[in-house]
Image 1: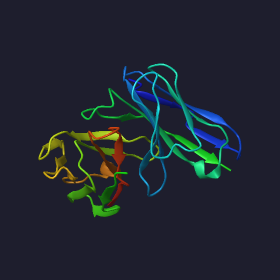
Image 2 (image 1 turned 30 degrees about the vertical axis):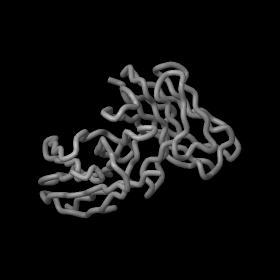
Image 3 (image 1 turned 180 degrees about the vertical axis):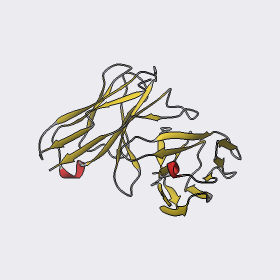
Image 4 (image 1 turned 90 degrees about the vertical axis):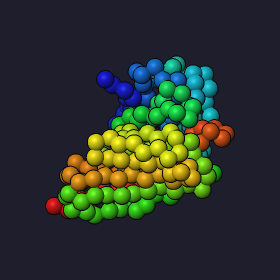
Length: 114
Length: 112
């Protein structure tokens, strides 16, 4: 059971470089999310997609873009990486964005921007 | 935005001891979720709560949805070494965008 799969698991970027973090889920979930995790700050929502074809900003969207490619896949793009974007990034999915649904997480992408 | 205060930030206990942690919110939530995160892994769902006053168990773990809908508690009984990790609460409201808000986590360390 794959669940939520993120690639890559580790990445080092130079300031100004761009990259795309990939996420795919095989649970037929409608909603998908991107979070970043920084020490002492818990998980903060970057962007989410309540359903295929829709995306919305979360708490910390600046410097990121997302694409809901299809129901399975939700990618996060850094156009011009900055050291402040050094973090661990988690993708999650849930059956829907409604109140009685649970989010399931991938294993994370550890990104370092130098 | 909504704020979730989770306490304690860290705990150092001996194997076999019971553990209690809690989350409080500045606003009402309709869902409370508790996750555990092991080093290098993503958070894994432990318990989900959907009704005020609800008490739910998952093995040695018990969580409660506070009656005010602004807090939740997680208890772990008779801790074992594999309980080590970071525990996160998360809440979701019905108002507005229904996104999950996460607490800052409780890091549990078990002293041999």
